[in-house]
Image (tube, rainbow, N blue to C red; front, side):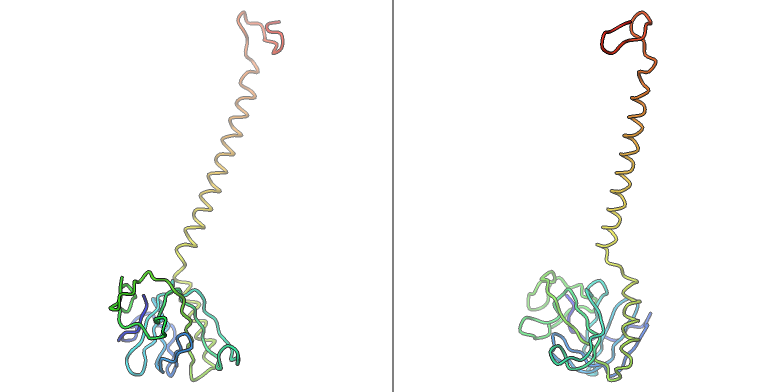
Length: 198
């Protein structure tokens, strides 16, 4: 589970740092702070020191969302993650490790209790959204979804197996066709298939 906790900013592989960035989790404001887009994970550290860290495989979608009265009033970097960052009553989850490896939080909510969470990062300087998106895309590309690569591998293996089976079948047919061409029956006379020896 990915939850709010006290953590420092990442120390290595930072591709983009955006100060004065407000964060909204399911449209609930959590405050302002600094967004760190690093090669290992995405981290937000609030001005009060509390924040969260997301591993890229949990990010199901990221996009630049433009302000729209029906959706959200400000331009933002919009993320959908495949874990629940807040409880159903919109209370941030109480504690966990920064890498989200807890099996169970203090309130007994299991880590495998799947959910979806919308997160919006709203920088004070909206002109930086393109850079934020580009950095996010580059870092997420470093962490391909294992399910995608295993599906590709399975597909390639299946194609190879099918090709080998077709090739083997072709070889067997060729062998069978030529197998009886020179065969002779009993006294050395060629065999007529319908009537027997000639």
